[in-house]
Length: 206
Image (cartoon, rainbow, N blue to C red; front, side):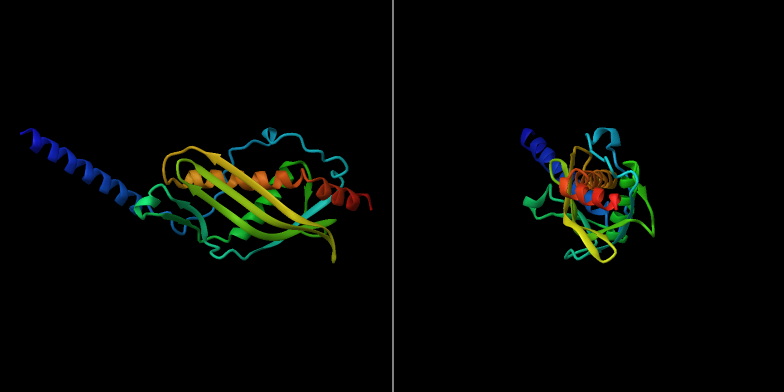
């Protein structure tokens, strides 16, 4: 009797485990839209010296996206040791999303953003835009940035942002929040780069 009970419990555990894996597979996060959903408040980003920049107008130009898989924005590797990796993909244009919300963050810093006729234009390339979920969600955004005035390049470099959080497994909102916070972090970190700010200040003074 005892052996039969143990066998039933083991079978039940196996069924529940299989159901859990199947549930994850059924909850597809393929071709989802990109959603701007930062949890970081601008008051939490720390001090940024924007002296000399408030009279400057800034445009954010088109970004390139030459990643191997432009649609890939996330991976769940919780069960990688069992041969299961779940991908998160989007049907939206990541480069356009990044450019649009670079404008959002720059505007939230109190600077003037124009679509055309600006003093300087920030453009570049999306090098990384990915959230990995294992025990926690961890996202990283890496941008190659160029600041130009007309045909003249005033500064070139990189902007990097990251974010980490706990959350329920394989939920789109957690990917959205982590990626949004990482992009916000990348833009804020860009404005903390001395040489970048010096290039903008010099442009504003002319």
